[in-house]
Structure formats: C-alpha cells, structure tokens
Image (tube, rainbow, N blue to C red; front, side, top):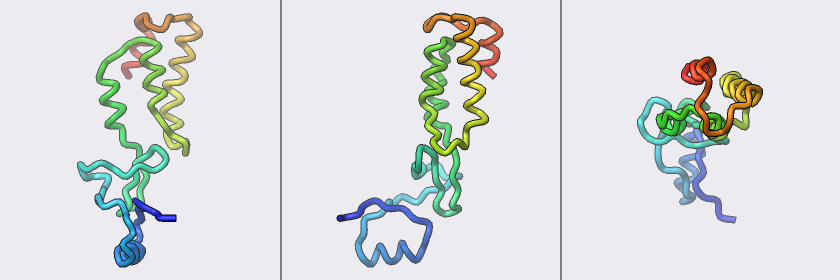
Amino acid sequence: MLLRKWRTNSKQLNLLWQQESTETESSETSAIDLRPPTKVLGLAWDPEKDLIYFDPKDLLKFMSRRGDSKIFILSVVGRIFDPTGILGPFVIILKCLLQDLWTLGVDWDFELPPKLRHKWQQ
C-alpha cells in the first residue's frame, strides 16, 4: 500500500521519509502563520508546537451573512465539527439558544424575538 500526504512533528521521521521519497504534506504551518492549517479531526494542528486548536475563520465568514433566524443558527451549529469535544462549553450555549427557539415555537425563517436576538448577537 502506497502511503501519501503524511504529516508529523518528528524531524527524524521527516528525514527518513525524504530519504525514502515518501509523499508528505509539504506546507509548513503554524498557529500564528497566515498559511492554512493542517486539519485533524475537524480541528487545526500546528505540528511545530504540537498544538491542536479551533480555527474559526470559515465559521466567522459564514456568520458574516448576519442571519437572525432559527434555520441560520442551526446552520452555524451544524458547521462546527468537534469530535473531540474541545468546543463543548461554547457549543452548548448555541444549543441552548436553539432549545429556547423550539420552546417558543419560532418558525424557521422568522426573525428572532428581541431577547433571543440579543443572546445570538452576544
């Protein structure tokens, strides 16, 4: 089996792979660089510092549409892929907001009530 596009933070393993001509991810990334991060389980990984972090750029770009409806909030929550549960304390706030919308019976495309709109904007 031919393995391709591997990524590691081990310099020794990288040298070995170069000697064996194994195809690896060639772009160096860092949490503070402007280059795209390496994606691991839906999160960003900085192999130099061995740091896993959430990169919110795509989510913030989507949220810049400024939707104030139940369907838009559900779309935002659905875009957060967090299989490791690192973002759980933040995502639960959005899920509680959705629960409030269901309890009040707000329709999918209607604007949020003022109290919940304030929560959403926060």
